[in-house]
Image (cartoon, rainbow, N blue to C red; front, side, top):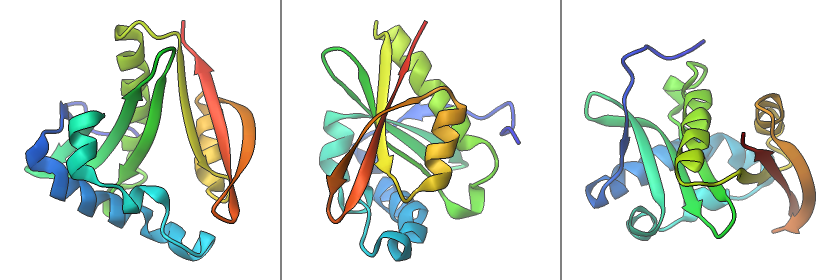
Length: 154
């Protein structure tokens, strides 16, 4: 399912940090029992992240319902976080934001976009693979494993 056509993606500001924290914690809460701890995005300092990273939001009225956080690196754009409020999951916001990040990467002159996720987040790995991301490697992280993925951009 794709979101409504009038969905707007807007850049987060410092004023959005608290709402970003709430959205991210709600979106990742389902993974706590899977991995036995809070995932990294639940512990992030969003007051800093909103200043140092690019965070783009989908809003329903004044409430952010989905976000993508990216970090510019020398040779690629890194997707640090994709989060959708549980009540809004399954509506295509994740795919929309992934396409947005790829467009952003191209506009910044990047030919590659990267991400990482926990190997236990099987549905995420499946989605990213479906979107054309390839697995680079796995690495041990906090008692589990991260899978690093990339996509070459045309």
